[in-house]
Each structure stands twice: as structure tokens, then as C-alpha cells.
Image (tube, rainbow, N blue to C red):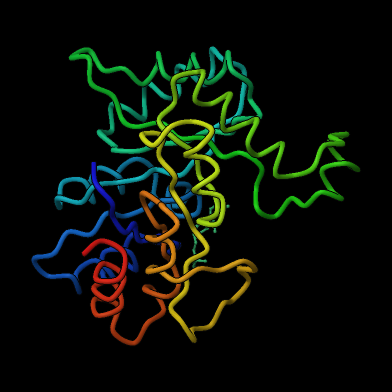
Length: 232
Ligand code: C5P
């Protein structure tokens, strides 16, 4: 798969999501379905969006014992999603079990990527609540390397970390990067933001873009602008 823009469909209902996607007419952007929409509408929303011809990143961030994650991944892979994810903190045995669960009877499987440390966790909370004393960037890179060793396809990270991740884990290891804003745009609650053009220069493989597209006056034009800056 080449570089692409993934739209974070952070809506709380099927109606809002489909009304949003209807605006794209013949175009079929890659979409991310997160916990909010999945828990509101269940697997049916995944099937419906897939049937409309979109590729789907199902962002459910699994984290449990290996056997439970393996079985859950087998169910998600049956939904024919293109990318799914888990927490690298679940450790290598959990990631390996997840990969086994994802493999379909025909040998294919969705791509599997790992969340390293959430961007809402900083060094202070990591030390206080998780008893991890190392610098945050070392922890993120260690989790990325462990994910690569487990056979995963990539990580979710900041575009600012994409180069380092590729150095440590190889150019083929995917970097899927949120925190993207247009130059001069509203940053909202994102702290370290990058434009689509800069994310391309930094080597991101996929950018995940939510509000700059979903809250735009013309979402299709905003998506096209992202594609023009990041892909073309
Ligand atoms: O609206 P915005 O562009 O900030 O949306 C970014 C999307 O990426 C949201 O769905 C958010 O949950 C997700 N995300 C993130 N940072 C991470 C992991 C996921 O912003 N580290």
C-alpha cells in the first residue's frame, strides 16, 4: 500500500457518518472507525462502510491476555478491515497471538499496527503511574522495535517520530501518524502538529486526519487538499 490520507470518522452515529461519507460522491477515501462509532453501532457499521467501497482502519486498540486478543482479532479480520491495532504494552506474546488470530483461512490478513505510548501520556505520568523511569522517546522506540520483532506492520506515532521509527525498524515498517493540521488551521487539543506536506517530508506512510476534514465547511475540498499535499 502506498501513502494515503485516512479520515478519522469520529462520529457517534451511523446517520452522521453516512451523511458525511455521502458528500464524497464517487470518491472512496480511506476511513478510520474508532471506539465511539464502533461501540455505538457495532460491526454492522464496519460492514456497511466496507460495502460502500472504502478501506477501513479499525482503531480499537486491543489490550488483554494473548488468547483473548487472538480470538477478538479473528472476529475483526472476518469483518474484512484493512488495518487494525493494539497496545504494544500488551507485550510481544500478545502481539504474536494477535497476528495469528488475524490470519484468514485464505492466508491473507489485515495490517496490524501498535500504539506505543498514548500521546496523552507524558514522562511525568509514565513515571508516576506506570513506574517507567526511562525517557519517553526511548520507551516509544523500544515498543516500536518490540512490535517489529513480533512481526507487526507498523506503529501509530507522531510524524515527528516517523524518521526515527523507520531507522530503527526499517523503511517498510509503517508509520501511521495523527496530529495533522493545515498551515494556519485550528490545532484544537493536539499539541505537536504537522502539516500534511511536512508529514510527507518526514516520511509518514499514512496521515490520520479528523477535524480538519470532518469540521471543514467543505470536507471534500479539505480531503483533496490533504491528498494533494501528502500523496501527489
Ligand atoms: O481531529 P483530529 O485530526 O485531531 O483526529 C485525530 C484522530 O487520531 C483522532 O481519532 C484521535 O483519536 C486519533 N489519535 C491521535 N493521537 C494518537 C492516536 C490516535 O490523535 N496518538
